[in-house]
Image (cartoon, rainbow, N blue to C red; front, side):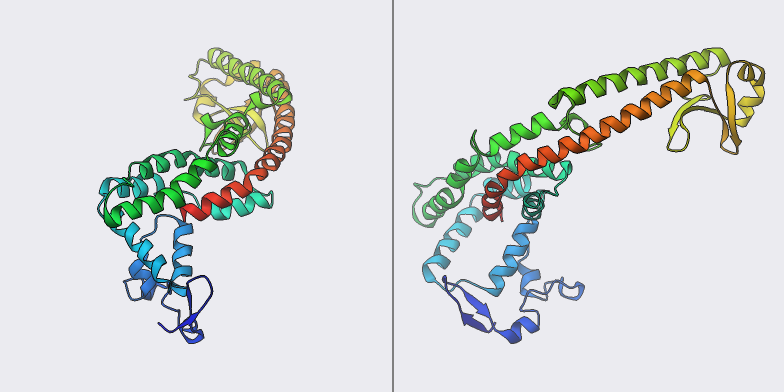
Amino acid sequence: LHVLPLAGGRSGLAAEAEANGGGTSTSSSNRACTSIYALLCHQRTPMGKRLLRTWLKQPLVNESLIEARHDVVELLSNAPSVLSTLRDAVMRGLPDAERLTRKLERQNATLQDLCLLYKVSSAIPLLITALGSLDTSAPGARGRGAEILADRFAKPFEELHTEDKLRRFEGLIEAAIDLSRVPEEYAVNPSYDQKLQELREERDAVEARLEAMGVKAAKVLGLELGKSLKLERTTVHGYHFRITKTEEQKVRKKLSAHYTVFDTRKDGCKFHSSELRNAAADYERLTKKYEASQRELTAQVVEVASSFVELFDGVTNKIA
């Protein structure tokens, strides 16, 4: 590589090297170890991959810093259990905290983004434990490497993951987001806000009414709810019942005596009752209020969570 001196004990790639990929090309033609980046890229996280590109463009030239890095490499190469914990238990599948933090800084993060940052924060104790198992009193490079990891990583992580810092963020997420429904749904926990809780309880009560109507309809028509008789909800018709055209012929008399058919197509016969229509209208009304409250509370949670951006910047820099 052609290098140019830079401040901070690093060097920079010459312009012509940059123009030719600078050894960091990630195109498909270069992935079979035909570039320095492809050869060295074994990072578990997106942040680490981006940092490697920076290091290749601005490699270390300070001898003491290079030796310190070699000490850490020697230490970890002789501590396979610790290395496995860091790479497989901590780093594997870790979200892109750097980009998530930038979204949080702009306050356009979603509840899913907050849950992903929660995952990052929750991984820190395991990382601290793994680094803490290294022996700083060991002779030679291993002891020096352990001391470097303790000073530059373990101790800073311990300072970040305290009750008034990242644990406080975790407490916010656990209180504000219904984690029991993740990843199927990302929603504010009803218990987080009294108004939201009341709306949820009202809607649950309406759902119970709808289910009872389904049981009643199955009994009246002599059909099995969930199989031959479906209670469905669509954006066009809301809640309604549906049976196949074949079943409709079998129960036509009972159907016309108790319900109103409003649509018959290839997918079956759709019908409802005044009681079902009223309950469906109540459900849609409450759902709109509930979703509006969810949006308002989500904005509030994101605003509060944005106060932790500086802490996650520190985490991102260390994890990378």
